[in-house]
Image 1 (cartoon, rainbow, N blue to C red):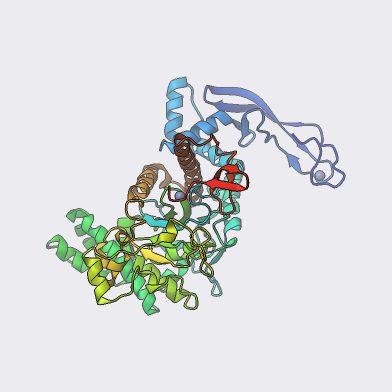
Image 2 (image 1 turned 45 degrees about the vertical axis):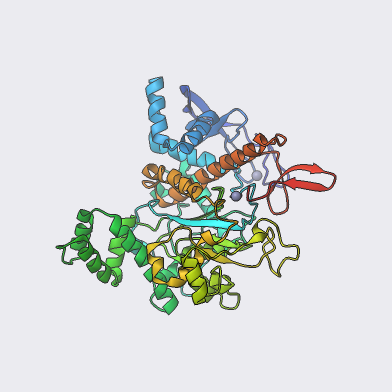
Length: 529
Ligand SMILES: [Zn+2]
Ligand SMILES: [Zn+2]
């Protein structure tokens, strides 16, 4: 605890403690302790106020009036990992202890403040794959949304290029959470963060990203019909939306038709066809979209095949391959294989965006050249493209190659044959089944499981204010990543390797776990294990 001012050069002693209240409460797992006194001290020179924010006694001081035990905070953290919201956990405690706990909102705010003041590194990296996974799986967690009228978001300044300072943005979200203790409501919080096109950064771990400046070009979705490539992107999203429509009950589709003022009679296919035509009009498109997807655009997620999340991007508008391109192009090393339902859209958009680099190559990210023979072979399941550098790094790495594989190839593939992809025959050359090294190893269940887990949190995350939603999501996924990494490590232990704990494990220069050191050789688990 400070006894002297840390800001003034002579570090003067602080003044005598002043009582704030003798009615503060300590809220813990065992119940509540009332009539606790809290104090502050000030610096005689600069008048800086020093509050009690010491953790060694096992307490977290929220706002000088309510104090939480660290045990309660950690208990809530574990509950969240098990999809039990803060309010449900407190309801249980209240029932058990037969005492009235503070309002659920206050408990949530205190928990967010606790997490914001904990020094998490949010490294978002797998101990097998390292900071730069060679293979990634990408998908949209589409029901993870918050209510927000897109029309409330202002257009960004004209000179804006889609670049965001990731540290600055997330620091500002953290600050909002910390300040929450000292204001009556979010509306009165001068540090509250609101969604905007020019200040809304994704999360990418510090090692994985190229720099603190990351891309989020969502504002360009606004004027998307401009270029042909962009109209293709809109089309891709539209097709996905139509696929979603097909899964809806006919009653919902009928209601949507009514809401868009179009004929609501006829079969489901008739209705969808009409809606589809109507969606060419931006306004109806937004309406259909909001109905099906909720108010905002869901989370774009990039994970490694072990289910560790590397990047998260909260979309304000409908998903497009652009969202994944924004993330990948903010990475230091583009993965060699990106698995995504709309691989074609991703390639078109990214290669047109960076025409001098053409990130997805060779063959525009397809596994083989687009010849009639290759396409026929692929259709018959007879095409085999071995990517042996996935198993063993190239002895002579390509120029500007991936550090783990030594290859400079970047493929955009898909694992299931998505309906909309059948339109382009050449898409058959993007199936992961053609790659023997990936077949059998790449387990789409791992990522489906991740999304299943994320869905279970919708019931509380989706009711939160946007900044709380994104703060909590990044935090919950961080703790999940740590748990998954520990499991991966434990799996190696069962294979007879020496005991290591996550905190003590050494990482090599690309962030892979080093299990033992013999002479000058480092033994790491092969990332594909
Ligand atoms: Zn001072
Ligand atoms: Zn991994």
